[in-house]
Image (cartoon, rainbow, N blue to C red; front, side):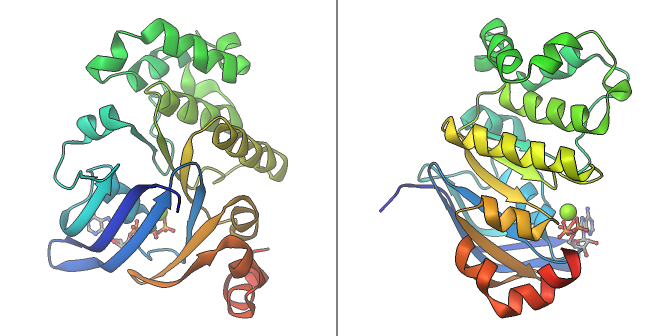
Length: 240
Ligand SMILES: Nc1ncnc2c1ncn2[C@@H]1O[C@H](COP(=O)(O)OP(=O)(O)OP(=O)(O)O)[C@@H](O)[C@H]1O
Ligand SMILES: [Mg+2]
């Protein structure tokens, strides 16, 4: 059996009195792409934030490479090998492309390898090298998403977490973005992906989970979910 890079067990998350995730079990095997889908407000971003150490009060277990990371500080989680591209990208619009990329290399260990990381990221995204002194806010939507992913890659993660990377992009750019995710995965990066483009996400992923009001209601091979009549009716019919 493939190694479980990430393993979440019986995870509960609450914000104050509001419970958002209930008893969630989810795992990501090394080298795979796992998609997490579900309606608005289901708790998808909360789950990703819990993995990155950014969510509210959590109970349960989150293990990365077999070691617990629950309660570990976000920057230490990055240093362990998990990078998170947040919903809305989280770029600093007034800063240049280069300055945004440098921030991705923040953890001390990676900072020493800044030039190497930058070289690797620019090789992956030649467009970012061309625009390195342009303000992030002046990039096109697709370029901004590329920068957000490039910034996450600066920390040389084993697990890349992407929260709705296709949001606000035109269909052609969405296709390019999915292609990029496929390429990163082929280079050895394990991916946990939240997507509204459920059809495309299920075509890309190896396995998938459906979250509904804070609970996992379906899981399995992406192929099986893609063919599942309930999924097609609930998500794909309406969302294309
Ligand atoms: N910081 C917070 N404080 C209080 N409640 C929050 C907070 N963040 C999220 N919530 C609530 O938790 C629930 C899940 O939100 P979350 O952002 O995880 O959903 P989502 O599945 O990512 O939705 P979307 O598809 O709209 O991005 C929502 O009801 C939301 O209002
Ligand atoms: Mg969200």
